[in-house]
Length: 246
Image (tube, rainbow, N blue to C red; front, side, top):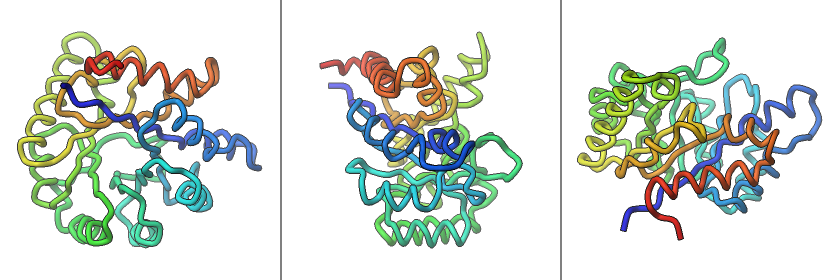
């Protein structure tokens, strides 16, 4: 039977809305509970260096209150490494981070940063944290992940999400080819960024991909339909794409 595709729900932008006014509402931890009840398999949160959305307190509470695995997105900095080692989340996804960007604009160039990334992958792995590298779907990046010993890669799907026509087909093939390459080399492929109800099915149908991490769209759609309904619909689309409906 086809492997069930996992859904990780990123709750960053619940915190973005909260931080726009200050205070405690809306609560990203409450959002994580709702996502869990609606069919999420994990929770993703990006603790940025500037704390523009998720805060240290949010991570404390997520680790204490949420039963689902936490995927901590983090930059490769000493500060973030220390936080990850202190909390020991299920997974840590190393992402590129620039202060001026609105959101993560592309994948980590692991191929050019082997020496810089190696100690982070090693320290996290030694602590029992499953390391993921957020990379572009490119052969050289998959090969870099293999050289670093990262057990997971997450392919940046932003180019696919914003492309149209033949260009979208080309981007989808890149993702599928790199997912097959990763799997062949013992690396578990995930994907995420820019995925919506309208474009998720072709990516979800790639058999090697084990997990999708989706946040901004689900939180935005929740304004109109509620977070429970938003997550449930995404779950149905993913299951239909895999032929794993109950």
